[in-house]
Structures are given as structure tokens and as C-alpha cells.
Image 1 (cartoon, rainbow, N blue to C red):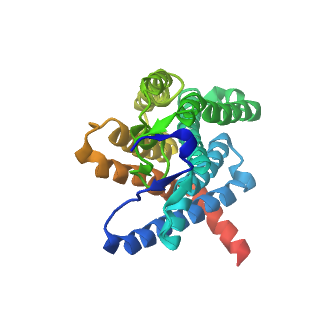
Image 2 (cartoon, rainbow, N blue to C red):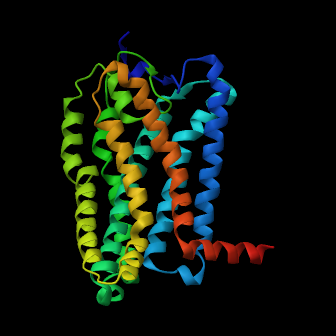
Image 3 (tube, rainbow, N blue to C red):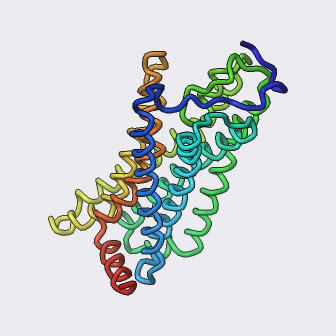
Length: 308
């Protein structure tokens, strides 16, 4: 059924699964993941306050934790409240706001990870110049640029979607308001949005950040292979292993979610990839950094010891 935008005051979020027997187990799983995400990322933020971790890498890691907390809250809070209340209705304005915030935070996370890859490149490839190149001012400028670009780059497509004039349905086949599922139910011409997505996909969005990160790690790997000492090579690789693990996890999920064939029989799998990207990745990030990083583990033990 076609509906004018003026008549569409709300949408119905279909959710993760239609099976009533799965609703409670899914709720418990999502709630558990969300609580672990909050605890893990707040723990990282607590560790980053330690004076011994006042370095560029942990500065960016703190920014990443803030983004993960915000991103998981934006995408999952409505899912959790829907399970509790049984009300899958979301207002038009709330849907558009969630769509914009989720897109902004997703782009922001990629930007911060790109900045972290540059930090690791300078640390390994230009170690003698590291404290000159990556200083407090540089970190502040890079972080500020990430936050500004993150919230600006989604504005053009979000503004176009906000002004869609009609919809084929008010039911969004997703568990939150993401821009692609909203586009699918619109009866307007979406070619302009798709063109904007393509342009932003080249710059400054995912493709450019992936290339910059990939190139950084090519230089990093080459520099590590030139180190004659086996101990030196292991130490150099260890300094970037956590970041590399997080980057690999995130880009693998994003490519699986957005670059798979857009067929109806893959719709449920796409929702599962979206759930993993929005819920599991923010949960795994602090676990990867805390488990693979001796400095973080030492700081956490020291902080916990003070609390006791």
C-alpha cells in the first residue's frame, strides 16, 4: 500500500525473527551482549585514564570505546525495549534519528580505526620520529576530524531519505532503522541516494579507509620483515596485532553484510550479519584489546587492586 510521507507518522520494526519461540532467547542473547559491551568498553575507558597509558594509541582506543558504547546503544536499545513492551512501533522522526546516528557512528568507527592504523605505521616504520609526528596536537586534530567527518558524511543520503514522499509499506524488515531497509520500502526513486552512496563509498567512506588501512599494513609488514632479530619482529608485530584483529573482524563483517548478492533469500542472513556487526563487534573490540595487550591487563589489575 502506497502512503504519503505526511501520512506516515510511524514505522513497524519487524525484528530479528518472526518465530515467537525465539523471542525470549534472542532477547536474553542481545541483552547479554549489550551488557558485556558496556562493561568491556567502560573498563577500557577506565584503563585509559591511567597516566601510564596516556599515549596516542590508548587515546584513540578510548575514542573507539566511546563509539562502540554509543553505536550499540543506538542500534540495540529499541530492540531490547521492543522485546519487553511488545510494541514494535517507532515514530517517523525517531526512525530517521536512529538511522542517522547509526550511520554516523559506523562511519566514525572506520575513521578512528584508520587513524589508529596511521599511528601504528608511524610507530613501526618511523620509530625515531614517532613522538614528533604523533604528538598531542596531532592526536587532537585527527580525533576531531574523525568525529566531524563521521557525522557529516551520512548527512546527504540521510537528508534525501528523510524527504522521501511515499512508502510501499510501513513495515521495516530489520531490527532497527537502517538506511538500506528504509530505502527498500520507499516508492520514490532511490537512484540519487544510491549515487551519493557510491560517491561517498569512494571518499570519505569505507573504501578509502579500507585502502588507507591496507596500505599502512603493507608498509608495516615490510618494515617488520626487515627487522633482523626474531624477538624484534615479534615485538613489533605484537604492538599492532590487536588493532589488526579488530580491523579484520570489522571489515570482514561489513563486506559480508553489504557486498553479498542483494536477493530476497539472503535477507535473513543479512540481518544476522547486521546483528553481529552492531552487537558482537563492539563487544569483541574491548575483549581483543584487553586480552592481547599486556599494558591494559596490567593497568586493569592495578585499578581493580586499588578498588579492593
